[in-house]
Length: 463
Image (cartoon, rainbow, N blue to C red; front, side, top):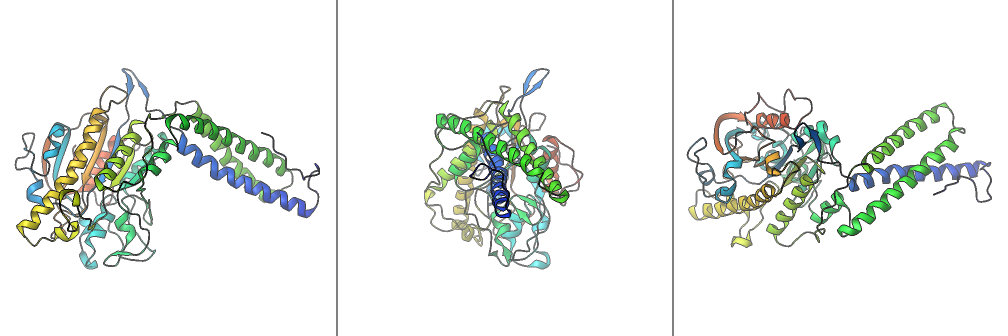
């Protein structure tokens, strides 16, 4: 594709007006090149999940955090016996086929979510501190402040190894402004991931958009054609930017030439990344994209779990979060005959009939999790083991007992083998241990430089 910065009469621009028009045109295409190249590149290329080792192929380790809102009914969740001989409780019964591939962990706290001097707002604090493990600022304005979440810390260490450093998903709505809990901003309620103390990462709730972001639009055959077309477009844009920049170089003074050099450096980095990914196999799963957001909640959750499994299977990312519903969610569960809102029911005031309904909701959520974990267990990784064997999936809530809004002894499950060496198939009872200790130990297994501390951590938790 040929590009020319000359005026329509074929001559180089001589007048001020012509030079201004040429500069404007260059600026437009330069900006388009920067904007188009990276998103098109990031949404269409996959880095391989293959790493050579002495014994053949090795698989990467993945981590995901699945959040369930409003706590649980403790008596139906916690096993009676500690250790490997624990019996699954009614709430955990759907996980029976996976009993030896998970750990139930009690005694983990997130005391940063306690009220302290800030008063009401336990739901916002529970969600905002779950992965950051630091106290959030009580504000309903734009001056939000939390901490960097553990998923983003890990993504910062290993995210360059995959097309996407992390993946943020939700089965709830997405709100970015307003007061969502007693003077706390909606940002604390609707987001699990925080890139910086004042920058949450908004999750995607539409499974079709997630799929197209990961693999592109269209059928499997159309995605191949789309990939080739985007590759050609990327090269055409880069060629134009570099050619036009060379023409422009001689007309600039020292300061502008420095700016141009900085810009060209970024363009060359883009070019190098494209060249690198073109030498690698592109993952293109033989499945159709979802049609959109289903009407049924269980179908929505199932699709989002499918997207998460596909992202791990294709090594599109190794770090993910999934918010099943926001803290304080008052969703009803007509699928199981419960018309009342979840949040309202959790304030049961020890009414046995209401408690039974909350138990049914707790069981329903665990049933959705069990289907996902079984799929992960049945999907082979590149080394012949299962995806689950090379993953660490945390399922839990920042609220413990929803009736009292407590943040100690959080309901936490850790499923998966984390690549080997983990003590699975057990119920672990610890005492007053920051959940951030568990996150530190998980981060260790993901590679990269070891963290000294995260949030309110006091050490490592043996997993």
